[in-house]
Image 1 (cartoon, rainbow, N blue to C red):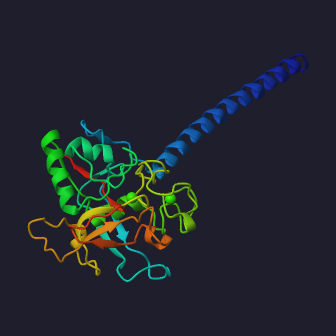
Image 2 (image 1 turned 45 degrees about the vertical axis):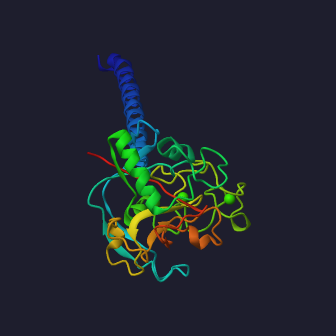
Image 3 (image 1 turned 180 degrees about the horizontal axis):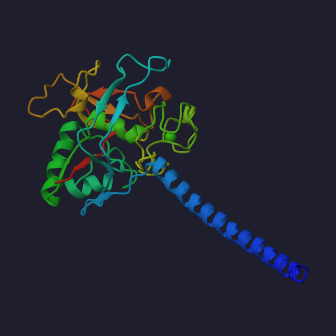
Length: 288
Ligand SMILES: [Ca+2]
Ligand SMILES: [Ca+2]
């Protein structure tokens, strides 16, 4: 009997091995698929590209939601390019920011103000320039009247949080200048554009914001203080602003003479009634 049952047992064992092998293969396949999916999720989280946007209905300006967070503003003293007014300090944003995805364009300015003061008016999608800080306050007032929404310029601290997008390097892509990353000055930059570029021509930073470095300098709403004693985290009220006080402007321009001027931490300033062909702005939207 035992002898007769032996081949049958052997077939059963072989079948069991095959079934076990199939089960193991299926389990492995399911695991690998799950792992690939979870890896993608992690990668998306690491990229930290915000997905929430507000589109202002009249000019179609998009604003990207940046979640409130703490970060180190300024540049390390170990970097030989760091300047005296870039003291590193921690800043915590008290609320989410809705940052303009692009510099405000000439067409958008004209749409709200009815006329464009911009130099040469090369293209409607060029950033608006030759607007003083006071001109921008008028623009904001009219935009608010027309849309029923609230806007302002970013504080200097909000601006640097936005440009860094959680990076700590000189530029949001690293420490060295890389061609075709921003619109800067030809002899060191190597980009193909001689003057202003249309907004959004160069790659966005990790938060999805365009031209934070280069193209045109951007007005903030903060009083310039070389020692970073807190004014960088506030907007100066136009009513108390004195003619001899200066406002922080950020990001460098298509005409900046050195790549140092285009670093995330670099700071510049201008009197509120100044206007030139190198300076424009972007807005933040204030969610109700
Ligand atoms: Ca250029
Ligand atoms: Ca810019």
